[in-house]
Length: 311
Ligand code: SF4
Ligand code: ZN
Image (tube, rainbow, N blue to C red; front, side, top):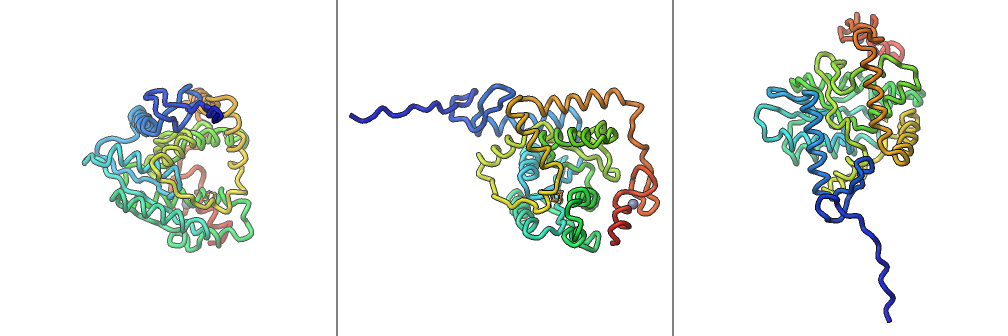
């Protein structure tokens, strides 16, 4: 007699009974691919509407590194606004010059904009600063992410300006935002901690928006996988130096064991920010005496870097 087949309980979608693609632990439900796609579209649309991140007449520059978060962001924004004549989308890519890494993600970004028929602007560190990140970092690899972050922020704003954008959207997800809260606490940086990360005008005068700020990284990864838009891309070689990497692994362990940890961190940040409203510990914004960009203090971070790195 044939042995009884082993019965495994395959989780099914809580909404339709099809095989599940993801377990949304905090919501206490499973979703299939189709319902996950619908759920993310709906939640991103709600984030955008509740914070008035996009309004008719906007030209939204979408920061597209080619990695999974920015790929998902462009797909969702294209799905929401692609056919609306009163909102224009332009993808903007920064090529920092990181060999063995950025070439592949730039190719992935180009393939996506080609497929969607979205306008695309690429800007490089070489063109803006006269050097690639690889050259600037020689001997300073442990500071890679802070140097890269400062230079990339300015590069993104410049690309958005070239596009004539009124908003600059980035693919920061819930994990990134929760990590930033914890990192600011660990660094004792109250000014950054209380800044509104959902809509901030820290880039020249183009407000930055983060439509994925309430979507988890694993939801984004599954969203791409179920649509078979998943490129196995290399990781940035400098990521090993990042404090963020350690915070990320700590937080994802906490989130797994205590679902909702990341959302609670974001809520706590809002409470602290509200307590500081009107008496913000952030230095007032002035203009850099060298380049005219908005900054706190006399000289902006990019100009200070130019002096210390000598470029
Ligand atoms: Fe830049 Fe660090 Fe990100 Fe690499 S991991 S792209 S160095 S911020
Ligand atoms: Zn400056």
